[in-house]
Length: 280
Length: 280
Image 1 (cartoon, each protein chain N blue to C red):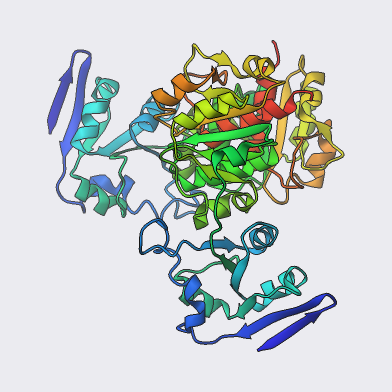
Image 2: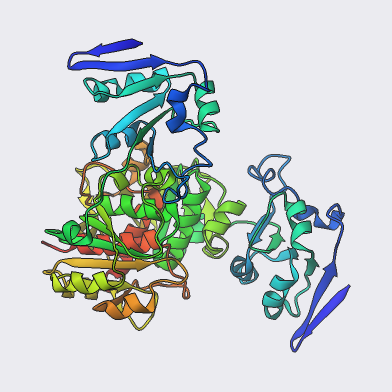
């Protein structure tokens, strides 16, 4: 074991040459495991990829229990890791590729166990703007919504029915690590929790391509002084009729050139932007 | 040869069982060809995938010279194809997968040759809002910019240096076919063409994460009565110093939670949205 000593502590560096070493099992065959962490075969680990996302994991409620990476990435991460009780398994790029099952040019991974999630009621306490997703089952869209939400003032994310796992590797990567930082909760009473949000003072704004809906800027101006929940559904089907009926305002983004809707993460970004552009 | 006759004409349907049939060469090994159509080995064909994108190709300046698809997609496309002089090669899903080299669940492809592109000066004549891209070398981002631009009132797209091919299959697919519909031109004098745009009355607005830049809503309000060019650079490096210096206003999207920039297509969408949300 090597120890890279920094002013504020040491990093536990463990050199490994054997791709079969069982200490690397958290990182094995990443393409084939954990798409469904809810199944008994799922490990449910949260995996961060790349220096930036690993740094965000270190700043999040998910504490890494191991890192796997090259020497170069160790150098970049040493200031972040110094003094922390987590092993850095230092390997060659070749060993890394063999363990994870593909060439990973980001050069470093961190693995953390999941932590208990808050209830929706706990989550939204004190929030001013939240996103509520229904049927968003694409990891890339989910990740983009977290990234856009983090940048554009969203305090928390609620998952209604039919959403993909925000902690799946691809979602975390596309979110640039914000899926680890922006708090979220899964609704266990859907769409019943929408009524609870309204009781707590949230205006429920449902995004739809319906041309009869209100224009985004008008709708946002009307709710500017209220806590707000922006509801978005999957591209294609959109929000369910249940969710639509439970909402207060149906809102559309004014579109040119025919009837196309935008990608769900882009539509959400426009809503978040319109919300945050209003003077406080 | 079969002919599916509609009220307004017939479709030339040709059944093919042999994946090696040379008439299918336009669609062969799509994963490995034409990433670089500018190279001598590149065929430079424009490929549309799926019913919606094929319909958009049929409405565009790119005239398909052949279609390859299943019987089911033929049924869906017959009204669009009736009376047109283009063969529909009808194959099984298995033959289709063998020809293109992967399973393609969209079930239909169309191939068209490229057409001459306008100059930048021709392109922008009469345009009110254009997007100008520099270094956007990712096909997915490029496609998203076309999709967002089409929906949010962009009249034309100018490519500065270092951009990927907007007619590459993946860009066309992600654009939902709008890369075939929104007119574009490649700058042959970069960044010199920016001065030409200014001479023609365009305000040049450069997107940047720089916190000293002007906020998007303020900047857009100042140029609302002028033709506008929105300049965006690649994620990461952003616009070159040349392009920055040639622009009139540096503009940022006000962001929360640290210094992250948004994805380039999302940032562009917010700029297009802010432009189109202003009263005319």
